[in-house]
Length: 336
Image (cartoon, rainbow, N blue to C red):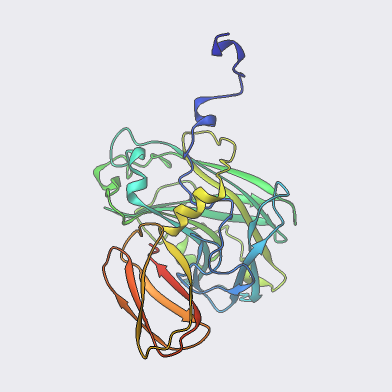
């Protein structure tokens, strides 16, 4: 029987296309750093892979893994306010973000008259209702940003939000002109920012591209930091080409982990006892090529050692002290 006879009318090419989600780990599967409550640190990914904090305020936040999800399976990113800031200063903010490599965005054809419309969809839940904003910042070669409002209508209830972003949103031509182009490299292309609090310096116009890179938000943004009772859950974040949100792309864990390891990898290595004063313990290689030469950190449960880089391609040699017996955790960080 011809395929046209059995294919459901509800199935579209967009709905069945793989690798359509420009976000990595949008369903919060991979947590290489930590799963328990961890204090938020500015410009740092510290729990769930690829998702970090931008923070400048008088309050404090934590993030942690939660099994409370819109589907009842998997995980969500749970943010909690642990120290309140009831009066956000003009230049202050609290933001959950993910950065995207520019070379992964070339199909958008930004910087030309053929620039694509994209659609953001996500599930969100909070005890604090009201108007929130999510911003998309386009880096190279000229920075442009667009804030978009959405509303959490019902407290403590999962809600799906969909935002369509046209390259000419707000009757602008920034993205379709030459300044809208994205460099074809491993540099920052997009920053997707979920705003929890933002001072007046960040106020732009809803659903309108701006040449002011500070315009992350609008004047309607709630102050989520106003109470230590506040929480914020985020899951199933998808950013894709087109003006329609397709069903969330459920990627297998191994594929998502491999993508995450390009930016951060934890390599666990068991090292057995030795009676030499100094011994080479061999070469250890990353399982995935990093975005850039990684920043290294190593911890161990006993003994002493030195770490010598062998090559920028990712091979490293451990040299250990006498009677060394430990589990080494080598961390390579090449986040944007």
